[in-house]
Image (cartoon, rainbow, N blue to C red):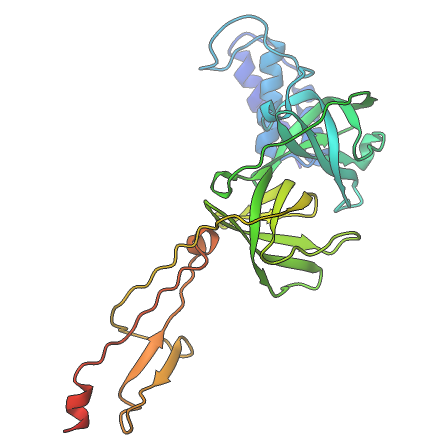
Length: 334
């Protein structure tokens, strides 16, 4: 891929403010971010521009204030890292997962008091392997975004050091209605278990609390067990995914603890009466009228409609559309 045009564009932007930048150096940074770290080109351009802004002490419009801009090694809490940032953080590895590609040496979730983020250590980074349950100081890592989910990229310029820390992390579960893409926890009840739609799938179904419901999935991995329908669980460090504007929970990286007791689940059952104006072939359930001789003329159709947002929030909504036939007795008796 040719990055010269993007590099020239960034160079011209800084030339207007009297700053001389090395175009070849910019091009090399873009190539490294995109080719080695898998960052989208638009994000790579934004990251390089932000880095140069900091280097030349140029504040972005609307940032306000004065003084020296932060460096790429600025230490931050996990929740403060934004896509495109180069940060240093200290956190605890709370989960490890199998790398999805030979180019990835290690992946998992690292957390601190502010939150948690998924991390990926590239094979080319030669970073030391991290152990679950240990604390680490990670210097000069890149915060990226994939499918709307922030993640931390550990590359060849990142330093990873194990540190001594005995802080206890007690994350606060969110209500289902407050979830957003990323890493989060919930306290919820297993409402439904669905048939597995893939051979690698251990379990999928529906979790619910007082505010709504959300789909969950557990993929087959050593040590993974199914959840019990009707049981209540506190779940930490689950991955919240988004697809077609609908959220779901991947529990493979999560810490799952079953609890005693019960919690109410938002039901939202409702019935709507009206006239069926059309039923497409193969849809609905049709029951013949019990009155002899009128089975071909009269029917009761029940259509169960679970639309996208309804399935996510109110999966138990049943729209019953009942044909009310008047005059049956009059027809029957002629």
